[in-house]
Length: 302
Image (cartoon, one colour):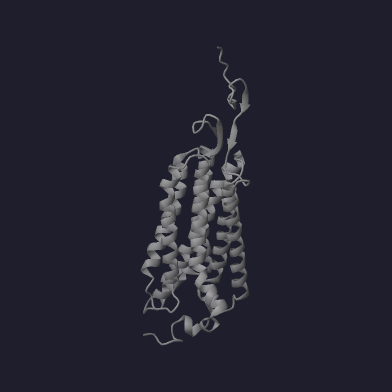
């Protein structure tokens, strides 16, 4: 006849005569979903390392040199970071993990998209320089300018992350609203505006890269990298446009799973679209890995 309230982290047993600890729920390495996502992340990291090794070994070939080898190496390293940062979304949420996961995600993806954007700008600059009176355009896209642009664009995201962490940092949170008998451990983003600005900046760079690559897709070249960039950015944008409604409508650990899936899907899309055709030519079609073939003078076009 008398009711006794259980403590916050406890719930009544089946007989309702005892308080037992609530079940804790988060995206764990010990459940099938977490294992699959972690495995996919490690596979993507391994593939990036293999492709990086192939490019370093064949760095003196026309295929690697013609497509801006330094930015390609940096792009592969940033893709490895994108794959690895997804592991931060799996496991028991802690304060430093909640703070690091979105900062690492935001900076890694901006570094990746910045490399793609600069590569696209270089393609346009090279083509413009080949036109009469266009030689001056290349002086704005030397090696130092390329490095500086990537560093500048990435530093903006770093500043956004710093302001977000200082003003309203993400933090672990025990959510009891989804289930009465479960505690859902999750990382609340702290400032929704900060998270939106972080994603918006990535989206802005991705859209700009897509538009520039789309404009350069038909430039006269037998192996025009702008075509690959256009396709890769289309995949990237489609994944993250689909991510927003899925993330908003996913409760608890499934929101983390959706974000990890979006990170992995977009990273695999960039890796396959940008480096798949190049690795195919380098490894299986070496006769196409010549200056004449790449410039469109090795074969007769119909």
